[in-house]
Length: 183
Length: 286
Image (cartoon, rainbow over all chains, first blue to last red; front, top):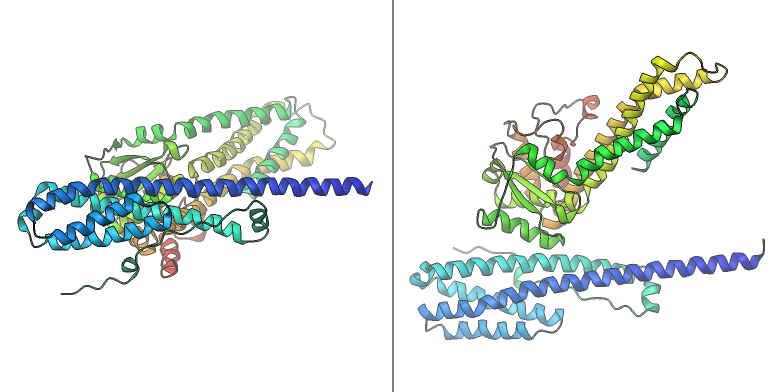
């Protein structure tokens, strides 16, 4: 048995291993991107509901300009968000603004009774759940990728090919805090 | 799973040896049994959704018919990264649910009207996540492969025992004796053992689906409460029979759930207490 063959054999094995690891890292990264586009779909759907909501509220509660402006501003920020970090911030801002809006709307019985408003409120709270769900899926995939990029030996391959860790999509401070019910 | 494959190969080998001394080619008949079991199970795997729904008589649900359950499934699917399965409702007051389909794209999830009425949203989420995990873990595929192997063994034993009546006389008596005895014993025991292993696999997958479901909802008590509620409901599900029992979230054949260890080996599902205990232990950790 020629030692040369053994060395060649080992090199081939290492090469194959690098190939497979590289492929699996690519798959993981693509999954993260796909998961991100899922969040994007839900965020777009959510922001497309906002103008309608603003119009409806305006019809009943003209004096709540500040709240409405806040909502519109958050929506614009969300539409312009370019990366997960910005989108997360804008989305959290929008969630907060909407919460105030819905709280304020409690003072307008006519608004609350409006069928259109009810439907919009329903739709918006549903997209909120969907954003949360797609966020969970995204974070699961980010966790998968980051684990692979941080643990040895796949981390070596990640370094060779310059893979970057992805960012988690974080929940708001409000969402993380315990809910306190006040009477 | 690995042990099971090993077991199957071993049994097939022994029985084939027994055949080998007869006048029919041992490998030929083994191949025939494998193909026959393969075809039978492929049909039930490939059209699993249609067959099961046909038997149980469930009706499909659109978003407008029942927006609550539709949205609940939709949201959990997004979190699991699965395509939306077809949602069916079975007119039955006994609370239960099942999922099937050959791959996530052909997934089907079915609820009884009873489960929709008796469980609250959190519990329904737990149940849905469990069923979606079955789809995501491709349990239909796994169980089909297992039953192909079990079916092969059963058919093979059957062929072998039948062939004994005809081909027993003119064989070479020098070394076939021991193999014949082993083969006969194997032919009798193998189908039983194979079924036991199949049921054990089924129980493992239930526990796995419980765990993956919790990973989706992050809320173990939802599923735990649901399991307790469903199991304490003594109403039997009319549409279920022995053939479809393994697919439901809880064995729908009430009263057949045996407590003893030996009888426990024949259950398609782990005992509810075990599942609930495992879920309660997860609480606070996710």
